[in-house]
Image (cartoon, rainbow, N blue to C red; front, side, top):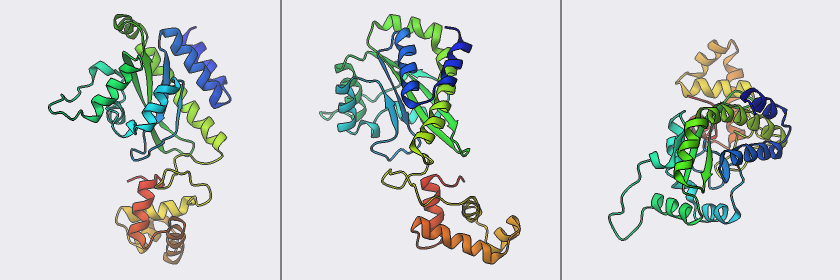
Length: 258
């Protein structure tokens, strides 16, 4: 299938399951045994949003051991736009009796039959224009020489496809969840009711940049009393004690950027 046909197929998907089925079929055709698409925009979450076709045994091992907090691939994926394979990642040496967590992860992957893997970092906009980051991991169980031969011919194609696929996944997931998936609380639970209005976010954004209420009023061409009202509403919705607390929570939860 040609690239334009592949992108057309992705564009025609109407559900998360359809996208999942397509990507598994495509990657399996290249020789991969499974894939995972993981939201990496919230590093502290125990169970970030994800879609995977991994065998249940590996999925349970990864989740039960909290590997998401130690996976050496994820910090790199947050900092780059370029695909990379497992073998290119420098791992710490075991110097004592205690094995570093990152080595335990890689050993566990090998124990489950995964010999190599490709990570495609994705940074894309959600339905309201905020930037999200995700890691697309493709797992390989066959001979490593075949893996590198496949990469030589398909790595760039996979990168293009994943940029398009991830954006489509973001749009469809937001529709299926019926809420703005970027907005979560400290426990990783999606916020459904307490979404800030655009003006409340504007007020907090300017506060984050050190602007007073009077300065914010001038910038937004509204009264300082209106600015104060928006600020109080935002504080109430965020359960914040003061303006500084509200700004900090809004940044943490992804409501505003700085």
